[in-house]
Length: 265
Image 1: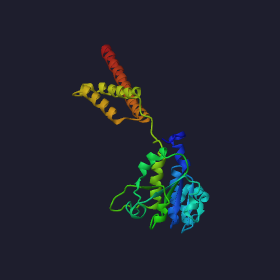
Image 2: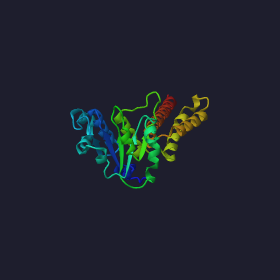
Image 3: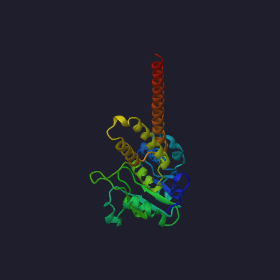
Image 4: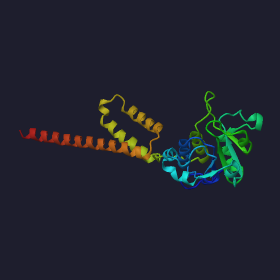
């Protein structure tokens, strides 16, 4: 397993993966790749023989807040230069049978590769993405240690370059999901208790007040509310219960005054 760093990140994955784009054609795709890398905290970008300007207007425009990744990217003439210093090269393909005849390669899913990542030893890993038109060439695939794919529809299996990069980096990064804190038993019981007070207030006009209380308890059990959701609803129920109590108290006082007044008459 890859060790987890602060914030639930895989501390090792971001440091190990080098994204390599082979002969990209469109500036907008290069910029969007940089953006996807920043989304998942990857920063090492190498570009082999680009057919566009990696720092052109569209590249910068589509990189959004990841311009620094474009500015730090290394442009190389050959794939060998781009993968220098890497222990493993991992090619990507959207057409799984294309390379079998020549390279005898059958790709595994990127998710399967991500699970194996911790067991293939230490060292830098170059993650290769091919040209938008033809993908990786036979020679580039042959130079790879692994070949991976993203399972997609048979009707249209090839993804946009930046989309493929984003999915691969998502699988490799495995961020811990952001989530609110679930409400504890104490908060839920307070919520159920406050609702019960409202039911008691209207019990005289209800056919089965006990059933209403049970139904609410079951709803809370299935809803799995967060602590903030519980607090918000609890605030409303308590205000309502307090308001009803004040009205009842005023009504009782008024009734007593009327009785006293009648006695004096």
